[in-house]
Length: 442
Image 1 (tube, rainbow, N blue to C red):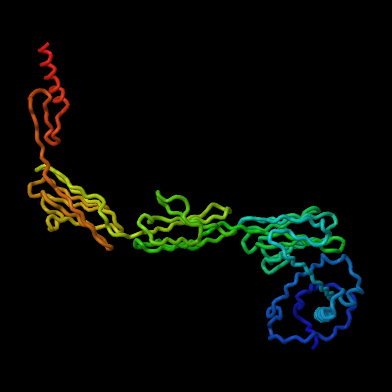
Image 2: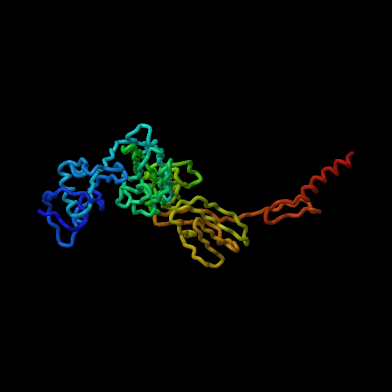
């Protein structure tokens, strides 16, 4: 099959250089290749090979023409035949195909790796930045360096070569040349993302021998809670499972804490919080905290509502004189809040009944008598109920009687009818009488 006379350079490991004028050897027959549909490029159908290209700047300053005509600068026979085929497609072009083989050394992330001269280029420290910041990759050089380039093993925008000398090969606008001096060759990556993390290689040419130094870029990411349980309502005695999932680099530490005056410290250091046989004391808010020392911890809360039937905590009998105002109180705790009802001798007391007022709140009910009569005395029952159950308590409204003792009449002998207590003036007068009698005897 004859070589194609038009189209792009086919070899993925070749660099086409126009301008050669040396006599070219006759092109041998091309290796057989499958035909492509009209209008379709073979490059679009087949992904480009992955080996890194060695730029022309890494080649010796001059190559003898004889080395190009004999074996295409040391290429294997098969590769030479492909090179000759591709050259035939571009008359008057000089085709040089060189493959850069950078050893993929098995090293732990963060450990600089060098090849070639043990003292040059200098080993580089790892670079650690936070997501969104700028990362600077520095490569120390000296006057022995004739060519230099930065390469990314984890390619940016499908280009493994970021910069070659002052020429930018990477299409990513975030990558810029920072310095290209006799002592330093540095690039900078703006707005770093997690996809930029990985090894980067500084490749230099000295005395016609390429050498490399590798640095590992580490991208840290602030913690972020991406999933957390919704607020939950559960009956007392049930089991609760709360989930808090967070992302970040390094992986964040998850802790759960019960927001309660009685709670002390953290109750779990895991993404999942399990509570078996939950009690009413364990209701409230639970806080999930995710931290990895990159930024301030992020927290979110989940409200856990524990439902339980009502229980009456306070119900006391009360004594009131006839004609006075009397109050009976009934306090109950329940979730959901309890509904209250009042009974006297098995007869329900209705709101608005003459002389009475029933006032119900979330945790108590108050029965008020504005003018207590003889008929109001007796046994009263408070009933508290919700969806989970009910309870009741009895109390007595009884008559409170007072007896006023007045042995002497005189200044200060004033009696408080409501309390049955003597005022201070009465006590002083009673003490003065025995003292006066003793004075007469002497």
